[in-house]
Image 1 (cartoon, rainbow, N blue to C red):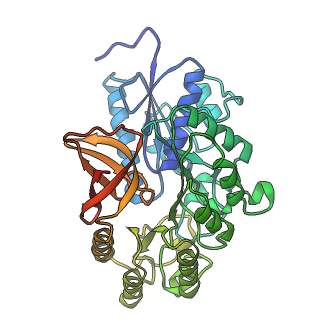
Image 2 (tube, rainbow, N blue to C red):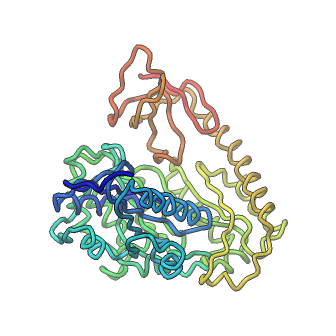
Image 3 (tube, rainbow, N blue to C red):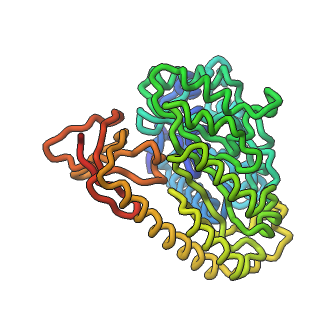
Length: 433
């Protein structure tokens, strides 16, 4: 058994879940550093803080397993204290206290000052935009708002994150400027709903105004939009994507389904016809924009016919990027009163069908890129390849560009012109121009 450390205690932050959690962990780590604490990210430490996800069953299971793993390490004397924060802790704190009492303290999603206090640190309000970036130094997430006001019937996020609270533009510009000074070239804008930004502060959808301020930040070369809600999409944003070179021709817009009856049951505020009209407008106003979406299969009432409608629609729309998930029956959501009537094995089979179809679409689209030249940013070197991305690809979730490392050197975090020489379903191969 390890003896308790006598000197300065190292705090290990463990992050689970989405990019919003990554951002929250980075802010926490920045606060701890400013308080003179020694902090690491997913490394060995005397004190462990687990930032959990509670979105769907798989994420909850991973979070619980991680908590149990560190509680066991604490019982073996390998760590001194275990704290839990984030979405799972916000949503299930009473259950967690009862089931895993060996955790030293549980905190919710908006308990940062209280968590810091338990870690022997003070919350410093003056640290606007300061955080310890855990992504590669050339790109970073910029969370522009917290919470969500949308009524989606399947979603538990408002239960865990609360109502929408937009971050003032001036604070976001300061944060972007500080990131740029640290070498960040690509900002990935995130929120539960980007298109709702500003309604609480400025009484209008202000994402476009924010973008026009961020493009002026010296050193930032790419700005990418993630998680834009389709209903009430602000059209001025499309004009900005089209006209501002720094704003990537890319949008991540989770559409979830296409059957009008299911969209109504999901409380998405749209229909098959309205969704298609929005996509047509995207393609009309920004013809070369990459559209990424996510879909849910197995929502209550999804018959074979309704699933086939979605499959035909995916084939028709030919999305550039697509993710697909099985419906998770979440307590306290409005869909929970519906019968979860699609068997799990059917849900999983439907995911496979959609992703197989998308794989073929992606392969065909990538074949069209052969012979073309793209400006790429390079994230890392792996084996015999430098791994980069075009403006049409977000890190970790989209296509990569692989350039053989023999006889050339590409700087990580820098841009280069790459001619595509070959393509697979989700990878492009190229050479330096």
